[in-house]
Image 1: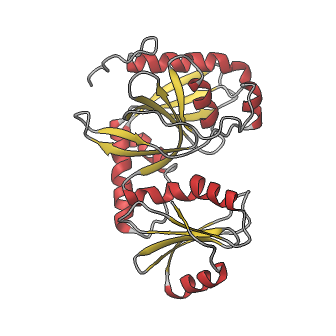
Image 2: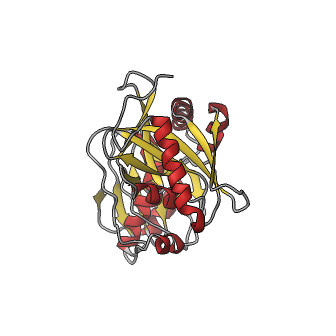
Image 3: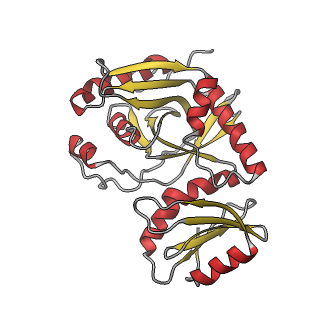
Length: 295
């Protein structure tokens, strides 16, 4: 990412409105004060938020130019790019990003991802599993992936995408840690392959700590698409690639609906049963990678 001098946000907005093609408008989140607008102009794409800043990029080079607002908070702008804008830009450069958290085995290149809507428990689940022997936290809230044939089949490879540990207060209290104490998550060396995905479904009414239901690809694909980061649905080539890659993800990676009792009182049992389910599925023993069973 290249940081450039602040620009006249109002003048840019007028130019983009007058000459550019509006691709999408993202509503302000609870932590924002303005909408975000996405434009295409002269082969360049722009994402801009008045009072914060703008970025420009193209689809041929993985390079981002950032223009902070003169009176804006530069740290907040950087965080906004990393957390919200960059995941929607990555698909232009051949890597999809899904709203998910993930862990990786300490030995070998296996990774496990947890997806689901906001407040489903993705960060808490990944953080808790990452504290167990044989595992490490890999990603919180955003996971970048692409289809790959490097293992001799239709597999899904994961790619580095900077994100930070962000536990909600109740989760941080349960783990006896500061919600932001861990900073940026370190990406391990080596190639990582996504081996299993869990779609989280917290339910305070179920009697058991956890229930696993295998999902067919046709059942899982719509759930995955609900968590896909996308800049706009007005770019046919971009969207065709997105649909193709997510179809490969649904067909290549075993997926389970994970219903669990939403209570920290049941958390110890939950993490124990989840670790056992992963170990049984991947044939992982004591943190050592074994050859996975052939389908």
